[in-house]
Structures are given as C-alpha cells and as structure tokens.
Image (spheres, each protein chain N blue to C red):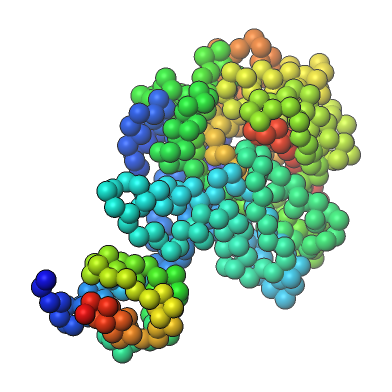
Length: 398
Length: 83
C-alpha cells in the first residue's frame, strides 16, 4: 500500500489494493495463493549487511517505520531525556520465517545443514522493540507484546497509559509483522478463514460485510506512532497529528478462536468511557472487519449494541479489504489509518462490498472514500484468544 | 585421501569469511583482526566455523573458536583439524 505515511494514505483513500499473487515462494497446495506483500522494499537501502543478517523481516519493517516516525517527531531533541522514552511494539508471530529456515536446515535434506547462529535473535519477538531501542538510543522500558491480532492496538493503548500516568515522557509504539511463509499460510488455510476462491482476482478477495465474503488474506507491514505528553509536544513545537484519548482492553474469556459479541461491545464501551466522551461524539469506526463469516455480523451487532439507532448511519469501514490482515501489525496499521481519517476528515472505503450482507446492517463506506467531518473515531481490533483492544482517536485542535 | 594443502584451506577460509560478512575475499588477509578489522562477533565466527566444518568434514573446538583473535587463528585451527 505504500512505504511512507503519504503513500499509505494515498493508497487507502484512493481505494487501491495491496493484495496480489504470492510470488516470493510457491504456495503449492495452499487453497489461498495471494497475500498483501510489501512491495518496492529494498533491504539494502535501509540496512547494512551486518543488520540484514541480524534482523528478521518483521524487525526490519518495525525499525524502518520507527525511524520514519522518530524523524517526523524530531525525537532526537529528547536525547538528553532518553531514559524517559520507552518502546512498546506488538507482533503476533515475530520471526516465524527464521523458524522455517531452521526446520529446513534440519529436515529438508538427507543430512542436517548448519543452523544460522543468528536464528535466535531473528526469531525472538522482542527483537523488534529492542532493535528500535538500540537504533534510536532510547533507554526506557522496552517491551514487545503479543495478543495475536490486537497486538499493535494493545501496544499503543499501553503506551498511551504510560504517558497519561506520567510514567514516561514519550513512547515509540506500534506493530510489525512479516508472517507470509508457506508454513504459516498453510496453517491459516487449514482453518478455512482465508479467502480461497479469488486467486485470479486478488484485489477482490477480501470482502468485509459482503454476502460473498470468504475470509481474509495474510499481509505484512508495520506502523509506528510516537506518543508524547501534550505539554512535552507543545514545548518542542512538534507537529501534533492527533490525540489518543481512550483505550479499552478486555478479554472475551470465551474461546480461543471465536469472537464474543458481549466482549467486543464491552471493549468499545470501555474505550469510550476511558475517553470521557459520549458515544454520540464518535464520527467514524475503523472496523476489525476481517471479512470472515463469523466476525463481520458479530462486530456489526456489537456496534448496534453500543451505538443504538446511530449504528445504521455511522460510517464504518474495514481497510483489511485493501491490503489484508497483517496479524499483530494490523491493529497498528488501522490505528494509523484512523488517525489519518481524523486528520483529513475522510473515511477510507471498504472495498469489494458489492452486495452488503443484511446481517451487517451498517454504513460500510463501500467502494470509495468519503469526505465527512471526523473529529473522533474508534479503531476496533479483536483477536484470537478473545483479546480485544479499541482505541479512541481525536482530532488535535489548538 | 587427497591431502588438503594449507593454501587451499587459507583460500577457503577467506572465501567463507567474506561470504559471511558480505565482503570480497580479495579484501581479506590472514593478519586481520576478526573483531577490529572485520567486525566479526561470536555469532559470525560460529557461522563461519560451521561452514568450514561442513566443507572439510572436521569438528572444530568451540571454546577455541570463541577465543580466536585473527583470521590466521581460524586458518590454523582448521588446518590442525584436517591433519
């Protein structure tokens, strides 16, 4: 979808698709043979040989995004206060690609081949927050959390709480993921939640809220935000993109794989209460919107529970329709999209919602983006394991 | 078994180090310090040694490998193990 904020927003708001045929490896027996792969990414532009060896692709993505964010936020100005800056990132499966290479070395031939000694630092989930901490020289808490598909949103929410409580002056937060390996693709494919029937027309595969939806496609990417106290940001005169004003995080406590309507609705309510605003103030929802049979109507019912009569007319879109589901990074990418929607007063579209499922009785912003006043928005993320995370993002006004 | 000459071992060691570190083997010589000149840390050294173990069908001594200082230490160790 793009390797910078401006490219990302241009792609989303123009209704572009980032989903294509998998060419990086042969998807062989997988029913789903498409994914949202980061294009035009030249590792040699960003990393020296040494760091290329050291950092798995998800760590590289997180680091590239963090460097962009730090530059925009002029984070180097806080160098003397680096112990007061933390990093918290989310990822679902971290260095899964390096796991595959270890298995290949052990089992793919008649004899074992040597195992790359960099396998462990490439595999470990915390490599992404550690790499950011090392590269940017920030010495506060350094966490990587994993709550599956809500990892990035939980990271951003936790970061917001640290700043709000005055524990840290600033926090680098977000999500990073590069999960598109043959083994992981097959594992998801076996669950029957990947879109299998549109391999020849990848851009139409993910169809949230549509009657013919068949699931999502895997994707990769990263998004990183810099959260800072208002006082600190104003003192430094940096460009404030928006405010994270609410965070709801809870657990369904029901199922490892099925979402629960009550838990999902409660997560939205918790976030709205945390933001100290009435539900009527919410102008837009960036949905979890996986495009699976189960998620979409359940999320719509939960939205109705929370917003009552307004639910039918409140703009709700799923950008997973544009580039797929980047697992632990998806909720960070969606939080960023929500921030941009608030900034530009524009709801990005839900692609491929050609024939809306009556069980998804919401305004899906189908096909094309919509210019609409958005002062406050929700970003919904729900995960396997029942870990829900909802962020409330507000327009910054002087 | 064909005798492996020191010259062959030296050339293979230099090529293996170069490949691991993203360098050209012509840039390397046996007097170079692994850490100071080539930025080789223990993980790199282990990858290099494992490749050489496979190449020459030898078993290196890990403790010795981790104490190596110069390119010539790697060459000497491999040469010693092939004899």
